[in-house]
Amino acid sequence: MACVHHSLPYPTFLHAHTATSAARALSGVGRVRIHPLTCPGVEGRSADGPSPLVEYERIVERNVQQSRVDDSDKSNKENAKLRKRYMKEGVAMAQRYLAQTLGLDVSVASVEIVLSIDSVLKTDGCLASCFLDAGCSHIVVRVKGGEVAKALEACDVTRVPRERLILQWKSGERLFPESVQSQMAAIEERVGTLSIQHTTPVASEKLEWEELKTWKQSSKGKDLRCIVQLSFAGDVSIDDLSATVQSISKVFDEDTGAISLVDPTATQLGMSYAACLKTDRADGFYPTIVVTRSNEALGLVYSSKESIIAALECGRGVYWSRSRGGLWRKGDTSGRHQTLHKIDADCDGDALRFMVTQHGEDRKA
Image (tube, rainbow, N blue to C red; front, side, top):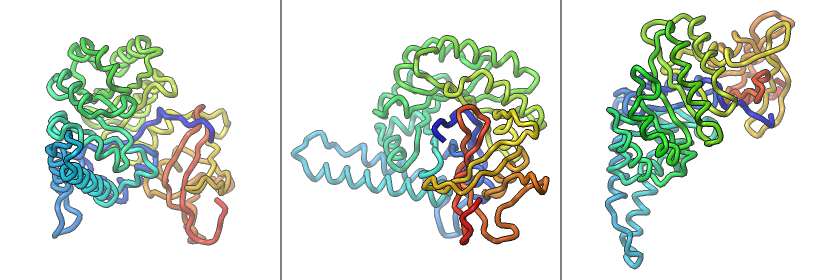
């Protein structure tokens, strides 16, 4: 698949724990966002092990230690060795935290991790570099209480390329509050992506997205993207959720923005994902290429909204059988099932690619 669609919905883990089989399956869309201070809660991996929160705080502390070692004097080899040791220990701890505690495969999924301004500043930016070295794709710096100038200082301290930095704020009456608009020129210099943490009642969706249209027009030619981290005030029907996601996705071009759903179910994420796809087939199905992690083609199948949801529910290769007129859960009868790693859509949004590991001798999808 030469051209990949980058604007499809993906999950944000704000309060939900990631290290469950259901949550891990959601990373099959190929991208996740993690709020480490809240998403794991205080649930430990085992009775005698540290909680995820404590484990994360230990990573922060190791990076504080690294930042306090003065290695400006290049002739002081002991300090240089000590700082390098702390750096390696911090990266190893972050790798274990991401893979074992959160259950994320950073070799397949792009992982965005949200860091507080204070944690970035007190580690002199070492924490950001640590998680990037551990495999995260982006660092999200979270603005708190309108402190945009302080957030920009944190962005500078990270010494991270702007394309790997995301600045996030919480919307109020407006998606782009005055505190953000007044600093927009400085923001654009430092980060490649804006992120709006937004809670919406469905009834106001059309009015809210007018601001996105204005932003899109003003940001033309600036190599800037926007992500709406979306949650709803109260329960929302699947139809309303799909309509809201679709209305936002229509604002963005293929590579100017995306939507992230906060703590979604497989049904919510799957229906939102499908709402951003299109098909000109009379049966409404999506041609789907199945490949291995080394991109070896296993076959051509078809997907439906129902099969996308089913795949995200179980983390397996699930497709739509046109001959049977129903879901085809690969391996249910043969035992040769497929572990789902990632779902991609092409840039036109009318064809899918499932990246899987096939278990058993059958090499066909």
